[in-house]
Image 1 (cartoon, rainbow, N blue to C red):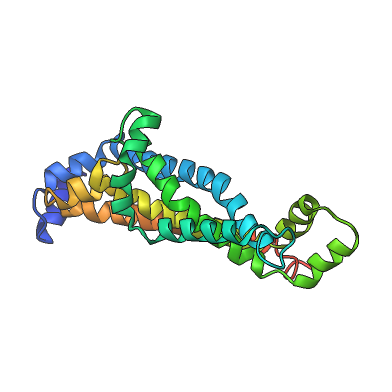
Image 2 (image 1 turned 180 degrees about the vertical axis):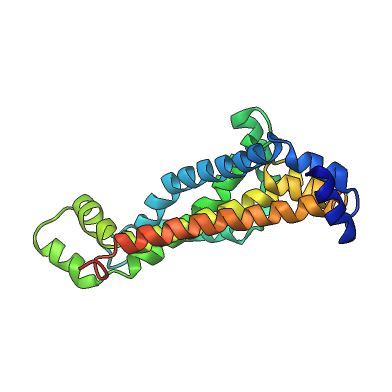
Amino acid sequence: MLETLTLFFENLGFRKVPEQLEFLLNPENIPFAIWETLYAPLAATVLAYVIGLPLGILLVTGEEGGVRPLPKTLMRVLNAVINLLRSIPFLILMVVVMPLSRLILGTSVGTAATIVPLTVAAAPYVARLVEASLREMDRGVIEAAQSMGCSTWQIVTKVMLPECKPSLINGATNATITILSYGAMSGAIGGGGLGAMSLMRGYARGQTIVLYVAVILLVILVQIIQSVGTRLSIRTDKRINK
């Protein structure tokens, strides 16, 4: 099989074929790269929602005319910080956050170390996604809940979040895919996974087959995540499942 594949790729003009195929056919390399590609972004997504979901809710409920208005100065500062973090390119943010990764995890290199910058980059993005989802809700539903004497906590947990569930799931899907792409970029500064495989082995060493395989696997992962997210969103949409 190896000889057949080698001959096939050599006829297509690829170089260093035996070395690349030996790497790709090793039963440990690809599964481990996929695991590294998934676990850091998924962990960062969870942490980003732990931070970003309350922030997104606060941006809607705390604004003037919201369910629980907060001081304008506080809201301006909160919006400014979120906009500032969102405006920094991820590769630069990773370098800036390296000391924080070293402080929390004891290292700034490796796949686990990328969880910290991924979370810092994703939390403000998640906050804006949650804010956009909650703003789609009919204002009359909130006013009806207020007229019945519901508390702010009840309005958020019993009205706003359930009503906006399909949009929130779509946002979570987009956030996961975006964080996955950030995780692939982290291979440029020592992160692992398919991103490191495509950059360090595929591009830097001129191993084109490895590069293409890594890109194809990333595309497949994105398609799976998008399909699962879309299906969950449709299943929770009351307008479709009436």
